[in-house]
Image (cartoon, rainbow, N blue to C red; front, side, top):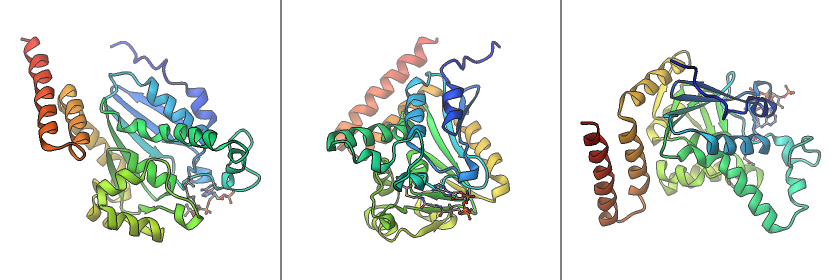
Length: 268
Ligand code: CAA
């Protein structure tokens, strides 16, 4: 087999902002790679992630998001919230020098670093060990599935810092745990451990930390064993199921099945 085309992965840009992307067949693994800063996140990473998602070819079927080391992600690099910021990165103080439209557009671009993970062309899996705080929790929530080590601790820290979760995490959190529990988790900014995360539906699976890689690998293998086109259509259907009425959703099911019938019989 010829080597996979990885020309769409800008490895230098990614490593410059503390990210890695490794392609293995149909599986892309994205690693937050700043363990010395507990994989805290920056706008440069969010822009790079959004662009990576936009460049992703159709033959990527699974995206795994993980953190290097013992922490998934400690959220935003908190230096960005202070007056000194980080050279080369937009701090909150930098942002406040622009008008409101500029701030709103900038946050919209940040959010693209998260929302690409909902693309129905692939299934996204967060592999979470240790802390997933603030933007880290929201990154895990941006994925379709979360495989979680038993030492995982989720926290929506933003309200404790006078902020709101604004990286596209509020919708998936409410969809997973319901409005009241989501409000309680966010408004108290408390830690949610692995067992509670499983009980609430945040964690798809909870395993001993030593088994995290193998369990993620088994899940990825199971996802790849299903028909690629059917998984894509099914993900899109399940995404619309919560917001559409029954008749509209039934219509989408029929249309998707028609496409599947056409695709399957075209092979005969
Ligand atoms: N930003 C920048 N640096 C961070 C960081 C962060 N979010 N979290 C940890 N670090 C750095 C520490 O400053 C420390 O650096 P030095 O070695 O140079 O001192 C190093 O990482 C190790 O940190 P700890 O010793 O604290 O590591 P720990 O394993 O004992 O604790 C932790 C880990 C519980 C995640 C703790 O570091 C922590 O609470 N971090 C801050 C979490 C936080 O408040 N994040 C912001 C959430 S809000 C958000 O993300 C949303 C938003 O957009 C506003």
